[in-house]
Image 1 (cartoon, one colour):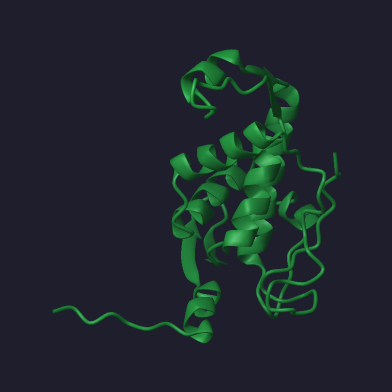
Image 2: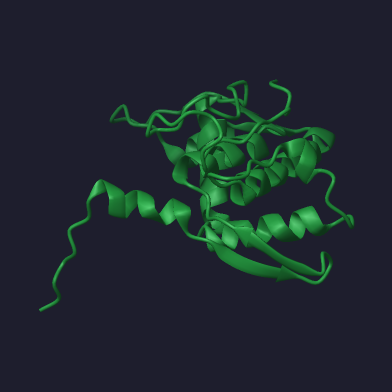
Length: 181
């Protein structure tokens, strides 16, 4: 019989302090990457979804429940390709800033944008999502959920305090200059 491990708060939150040393040829060295927390991933995904809008009304079946198939036929999706590209870049930048920041050093999105050569941000962001165990399906689910709720990204992308009540500058805090929509 397999014994189930009981987790306490410290054990659960310990994962945010994990470090993965990843070598990038383009940079000529290793970066210490931290996996994203659930809250960080949510903020990154919300920014990524900001380039598209979905509108329409729910279609109800005879039992008064939402008919998902009929509702999806009734939806109109508008994608601003320029904004979608910009928001994907901004979400990659924020993911990297979160991942590189720790209790001793905070990265801003402005600093991340200074990385060279072009294309390295996309490559690092992809690795951050991999070590965070985020699948493409999860990213699409968040995007779809936000669009169905009619959500947008007008919230502040970086909290003043994390869920543990820590002051800015902790592992979960990144200074951001991403414009609110």
